[in-house]
Length: 326
Image 1 (cartoon, helix red, strand yellow):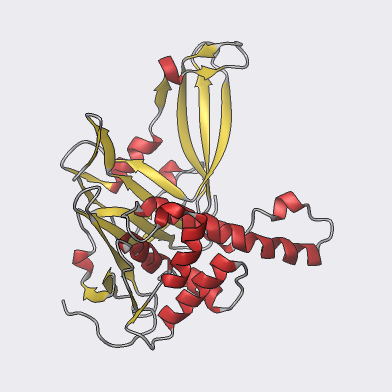
Image 2 (cartoon, rainbow, N blue to C red; image 1 turned 180 degrees about the horizontal axis):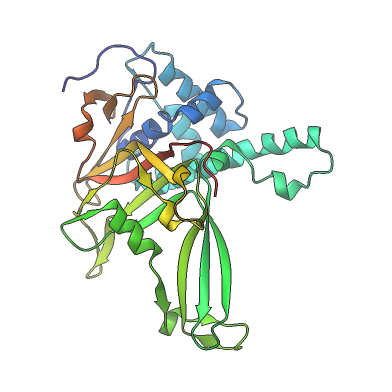
């Protein structure tokens, strides 16, 4: 492995502003996604945060710089979310959710305005929820809840942009094991009982989730941090995940469909402990199809065999047969 020095579009390091490796890792992953790159390089963004993100995206894809500073985008986010100041390490997953929410809030206004021009009868509520962020990242779950007393079943829909998966307490497992844990049927008792509208009281119940709408890009958060004896510890479980042909059809409303297969496109890694760890990113270049390791301002090409790591924290998968709907 050799550090990449050539000025190539999409291979641009990000300067660490002081404990901002979590931000740099997320930005590298988002700025490696071709659907997002195409949108922001077309100049469609509106709103301060979206404009700042688009400017950063442009700098990273011009191919003129080995490294750029994300200072402008960070300043916009820091004003909205003071927790993400430069001096403290933060959780990359929490930052990712804030970035996606912020970009959606900025871009959904444009979606509303565009629809109103073409369809004066369109309701504000129906169009305000549409943006490039929801089009790419938003999926839909359905929770089937069955009361164990009267056997009545109800369904509760829930949208998601990041799917947080439990990590089994063992030394080695697969991403499939994590998915099975998430989608397995659970029994709700004691403090977790539901209020059954038919029985009129709280009752034990069973609940099972399925994917009713799979997003074009699905992000898995591997829940490595958990409370252990009043302290938050980190699970060092090695999680094996495929680079291609990830089949999500067993967890969808219609199992067996071939268009529910996904390929890995980016990884956020976390090494070390909770308070003094370090984030890096692995991203597949959308043009060369080679994998690269991004460590702030350092970029290294890596073979496919090294994309599998025991420090993976966030996994970005893209649907192999776009668009992906169920």
